[in-house]
Length: 632
Ligand SMILES: *[C@@H]1O[C@H](CO)[C@@H](O)[C@H](O)[C@H]1NC(C)=O
Ligand SMILES: *[C@@H]1O[C@H](CO)[C@@H](O)[C@H](O)[C@H]1NC(C)=O
Ligand SMILES: *[C@@H]1O[C@H](CO)[C@@H](O)[C@H](O)[C@H]1NC(C)=O
Ligand SMILES: *[C@@H]1O[C@H](CO)[C@@H](O)[C@H](O)[C@H]1NC(C)=O
Image (cartoon, rainbow, N blue to C red; front, side, top):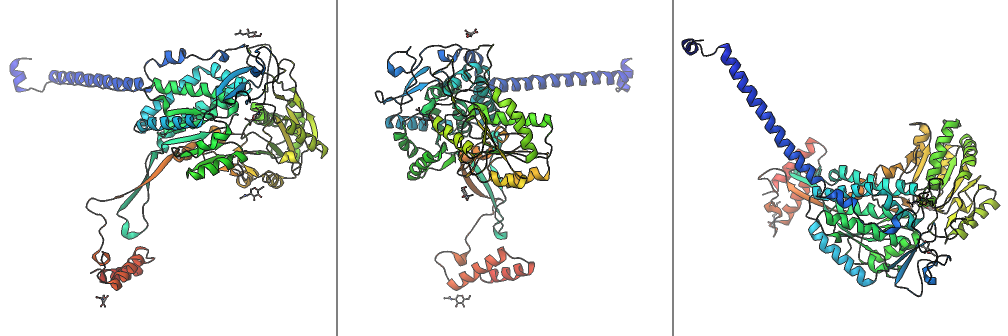
């Protein structure tokens, strides 16, 4: 093309191609910049997910020798002065050393060590440190708190072996039980909180007043940290019971004093140190989480401590009374989770089919024998309709006697252990008495029923996995919480009768129903069982699903876990603002102090109430007229 042509006709196909080309360059350039910027942002976010060097930190963490397989020192009672003497453990308290709490492995009787019992001074120091740490922590963003939770999650996941062994040494449970009941539920709590915690704590916008005349107000609830909270936790899941309140507390911006049970102080100390190290690794004060373990005589001092804003108590009713009395002195609110006598109701609807029976039996056995039956929401009673009863008795009679007791810590691949030890043998007499009493009253003992002297672990605290059938509601064993590897079967005439029997318990924590999905009978049980939680065709899943957890009647009150649990650790601050710019409350002259005319003021306010809550246009118009008449 000549220059002339180009001047005369600037828009030729060639120039179009050129323009298009340059547009492509611009587009490609823009795209590159966008990709670059977003990857920078993404990588910055990635680097914010976990602290620098987190992998080495997790990998090189120093666990105690007891966390290794085949750890084999210190049998029997240290108090005897000779590590090698295989005498029965003398218990957590030794009158010659009252300042120490002594720890033994319930499965083997091995001496684990002694931990100083916290004094009143220790408690003061713990609360004070928590207060200082919380002052800085409450200002952190959710993103900063999530970094700590993420590190904890990775830490637990990657160090499962050592952590589980520490929990098992102190509680006597098997490693499989610990992996389910300690690790899995804790990982779930962490993952759930990371994913949904912030949503639960976002400011909640409310409808505001129904009063027509004050509709210019907005209403909102914001959730602020409370300060230092206290968790008094039970021994049955030493890792999970401590981590659960810690996760919720630090995510909500609180700091926490944890009071563990004397029975598991040895492992609790390692677990809290673990958490503190993770917090420190993320650049925050490890004092956010402090552990105390006083003897019961000093426990009230802790509960009544004026520095504590809220307390969660997991334990027994007699101790709860003491805790609540002490907490009342400081007006500290307490969430109370006590025992349970959870019933699993099995309906006839699709039974007996052998596959169904077997599947249900598997769930029931896990619910009854996990952690040697020491579960707040373990299945304590199995109540069946007649056909289900016959089918289950058959299957369970075959399967329960096969359960093997022992310690699973020695990595012996040739040995399979199903059920671990109990925390100690303090309650063996009582359990044997309850079982004998039931048999005397007509129950049949299929297997177990007694303590077990394990040939390999003569110092262990073992109770035989027990199956007791034909139990009736008036037997004592059907009423009191067993917290032991004892499976109790009861026959009901029908669903109605099963619900009646289930509701005879003074407890109401969890429950389960096995029936056809969505059937009227299943839903009736869900509705009519007097418990705080219920699982359909399963057990304890309401816990794993991160729902608010808590019971009714003698199982306690208040909820922890889930959204309600997170909000329960917060001050729900109510905030009221003006909806529109320039419109705010001004006191009408007629009711302004000092009143000019009391009669007029009265008529004005009366008309105002009538107008604001008028049921009809006519009423509104009349009231408004009166209001305006009396306004000036
Ligand atoms: C057995 O364990 C329970 C629960 O922790 C505790 O109350 C009791 O004092 C323990 N008994 C002994 C002898 O250690
Ligand atoms: C622990 O002991 C068992 C049985 O004695 C053995 O098979 C296993 O190899 C040992 N494990 C370690 C890590 O020493
Ligand atoms: C609590 O349980 C007891 C004992 O079963 C029962 O008598 C009482 O009615 C229950 N209270 C409530 C409020 O359900
Ligand atoms: C108050 O207002 C009423 C009219 O609503 C009038 O009748 C009365 O005299 C006034 N009283 C005084 C003390 O001014």
